Length: 89
Image (cartoon, rainbow, N blue to C red; front, top):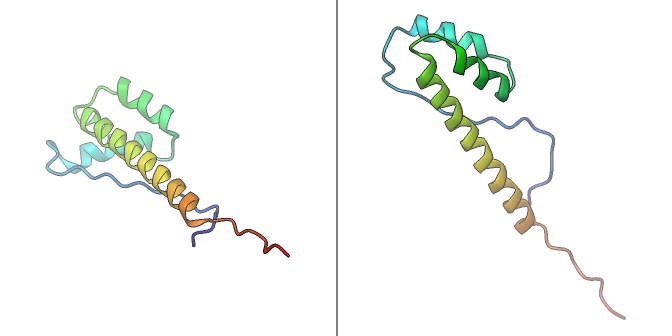
């Protein structure tokens, strides 16, 4: 049975074959590292770098992955916990 714990949820999304150099992509990634999601999306929207669009797409994919994982854990917890009735008598 799974128990509710306060562990940090992590969602992973990877981009392969990104055009441009890794150094240039890292410049954009460093702008959003450590920010919350809404701030990161706003920064990517107004960043004038070619790598910003694919990184935004990858970030949105990670958000979708985290949402799906949270829903699955919530469902698994609800299914795993069955209340027991007290014996009558």
